[in-house]
Amino acid sequence: MSILKPFVAEINGNILGYADLQPSGYIDHFFVTSSHARQGIGNALMLHLQ
Image 1 (cartoon, rainbow, N blue to C red):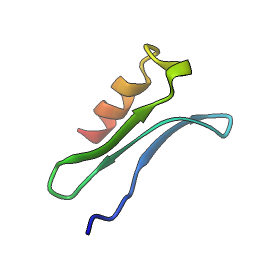
Image 2 (cartoon, helix red, strand yellow; image 1 turned 30 degrees about the horizontal axis):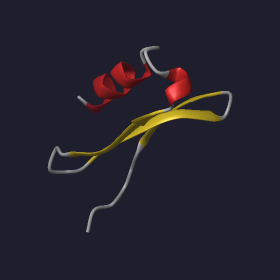
Image 3 (tube, rainbow, N blue to C red; image 1 turned 90 degrees about the vertical axis):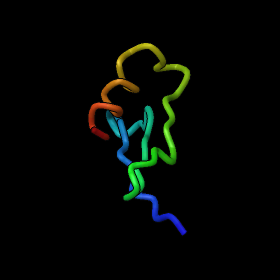
């Protein structure tokens, strides 16, 4: 069983995306809202996961 501890990207309380890294190093969840695509949110989440 995996335990989710997602990193959440938000502005003013609005969630724009999230990512979850399992202890094994597997990226289990990764999501960015379509309204905020191509604005660097996914890249910021990936950098945080490293």
